[in-house]
Image 1 (tube, rainbow, N blue to C red):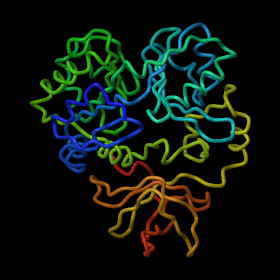
Image 2 (image 1 turned 90 degrees about the vertical axis):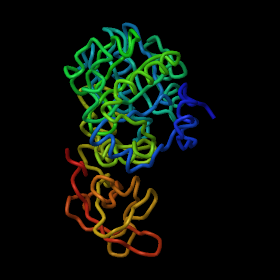
Image 3 (image 1 turned 180 degrees about the horizontal axis):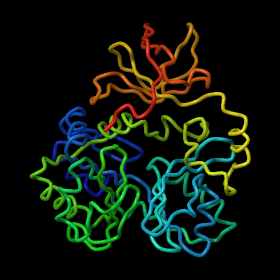
Image 4 (image 1 turned 30 degrees about the horizontal axis):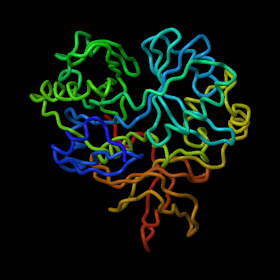
Length: 360
């Protein structure tokens, strides 16, 4: 089991640790609901150093990225980031990722921890044609997500940069918490604003300590993976391995907005055809109409027939009701459609709704 550079810190804080994507990770400290609340209303810090980082450089770096990703990375200027996915050759998704343009010919790809090796092999296969320089930085770098509406105010004393001027999906490379050349990125997975901080493993303890010092007056707290999941689900953000995987197409998953057909990318012809003909199933959001918690793997039922599967589900701490995502036939994807979730021996009524569940 791998450990992040802050493992001892989490243990000292009394974190409950669990295996996740090959790492020992903090799942909670004081409890999911309290931690969820902290991020929605204040500021909290996630150690997400298990994520993977690839550096792609050289004259053909953009051409390689355009080939392997579904979004149009040519739109990126230096200092901008973009959410994208990597389609596979058979209609599914290798991974979803964030692409950062660090310099004119330098890009940083941030990928999911469980997929680091798979993603590296996939990109390397296509790089034979382009010959871009590729470096896997995953083992040497740490990533902190400082999230919540008070994040900008709480962290401003730690940087010479005006943090409030960094727009969503923009970033700067600058000083933070006494360390030079840190990536300060206005990205995150919570829907409550904040930053993601990329630094070297040797620097992350100093960053963590100073972040908690600066945030003390704002009630800053460490947050575990359990609250990360409830926060992202309230926003309807896809989680790889649950809502998207090697067998789900980006169009089925509602990721048509990051699938741009103005360029040639892996399996783009087949996906363009799918767009033209329409998909047979769609990822939908639903709310339970009775007190019940949907979970991944539960059947979605209509007219006593199984029509789909729950891919993500939880009791929403913000809404105090059961919410979930799952695939259903396209004709059942319209908001307002009544469905049922099979929870043990009972079928519990639910309704398809528009995302996000939680509206700021």
